[in-house]
Structure formats: C-alpha cells, structure tokens
Image (cartoon, rainbow, N blue to C red; front, side, top):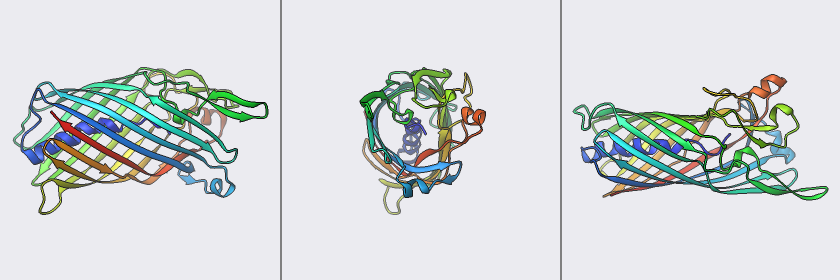
Length: 326
C-alpha cells in the first residue's frame, strides 16, 4: 500500500460543516485557514487477499514500515461558493526487513497538491445542507527514486528504497472530489470521496525485483471514501465526537493510462472514531481509524504471472489535525 494517501482532501469538508453547525453561518469570503495534519502509520501485518500471513511474524520475516506524514495546508475562501487550497506534505519513513535486518530510510518533501472547490448551492442554505465538487492537480515534487545503502556480500550497495516509502511517484496527477453534509438539530452527517488519477503508467524507477513484469515501479491511482456523523458532547458546544467509516486504497487498474509495473493494490475498510475541539478560530481534531477489513488484491503482474503478492498493513492510524482561521 502506498504511504501517501489522499486523507488531507477531507479536511475542508469537516471544517466547513462544523462552521454551519456551530456558528450558524458559512466561511466568509476573504478568510484564510491554515491546517497542519500529522499521520502515523506502523505497518507490519502481512496479508494475501484478506488472509493474514501470521507465519511471517513466527518466522521472523516481517517487513515493517514506520511512516510519519506531516501535511501543511492552506485554504482561501474566495467567494461564498468557491475556495482554493494547497497541500505541502513532508514524510519521514523507515522500512525494516526483519529476516535480514536491513533498515532503509526516506525523508523529505512529497507530492504537492493544489485544488479548487465549489458548493452547488450558494451558502448559507436554509436547509443547512450542501454538496461540494472539487478538482485539483498533484505536482510531482516528491523524489520517486530515493536511495539508501543495503548490506550485501560485496559490502554496502546504494539501491532504490521500496515503493511504499518513496517520496513520490514521478508523475502529474488529477484529483476529483465530492463533499456533502447535512445538519440535523445538533448532529452533522457528512460524506466525502476523493480519487487521485495518475495517467502515467510506470515511472522508470527500478524495483530490484526478479520478475521482469515487476522490474519497474508503477504510478498507481489512489482513493479515499469517508462517511459518518459528528455531535457535540452533552452540555458543551466546543467538544464534539465523531463516528464513521473509512475506505482507502490503491486500485488494481488505473482509470487512465497503463496499469503495468510493480504496485501493491488493495484497500482498508476502517471504523473511524474521533474527537474535535473548537475554541474561537482554532480547531483540533484526533482520529484513530481501526481496520475492519484489510485486502491485498492481485496486481496486473500478479494476474499475468499466476500469483498473489502480499502487503503489510497497519493495526491503526493516528491522525491529528490543527487548524486556525484568519
């Protein structure tokens, strides 16, 4: 599974919905919002399809990814309907191969995303509900061929790190998103989906894998879908809890372009509880999605070669976000 998912794309929805719910009015034109989001992902449980490969831990052959992603985002409300945003993510990651003891690292800027969004109905709406359509561009600012030293019988050798901790995929991408919410008394129902299309098939970066069909890294699409409800904690208006579901993943085949090359397609369906604290112009939120189903699906090379590769998944995600309006 790719480390850089589309999670920051949901931030604008959550905040806008809360503005309606708590303040009774939408974000005013000319307002800015700066958001910092931290995501921790510790992946070590290996799956083939939906079956966990428990023998990997017993045999000491686990591969462990420890990923920390910090996303700096800015949003500008241009008109009551239109807003513009930019997201600048930085990643620090390591990958440990338990069997061989090989430890490699990557750190730095990943792929920047810029976008625009418009509400279908001009805020404020009498029914306190709305739907937004968004689109954006992913800029290939992250290095797609980060290298680190691995120990061999001939001594240390500089090689490309695994695709799962690369800082970028080397290609331009296009995003499309839908956000919606409805306020019912004090509760806010929300739903959101975002899809990242990477038209470029492969990026020319060698994987070091033995199979010719997996020799070069793929530039896969990615997606995220979320839905749930937020509600104030009784006897308080500043603290809210949220309960929802979340699905994110990498498809087997892209919408546009080739799907050849090495990728680890699959998805995670999670229960997504969280808490939100609002004080003045400041918003702090914490979410801890817990997987209900993890599925490493077969890639195009897997299908061609008659096999089924595996992937490591996390037991949970930690997502902490802080934003301030100006």
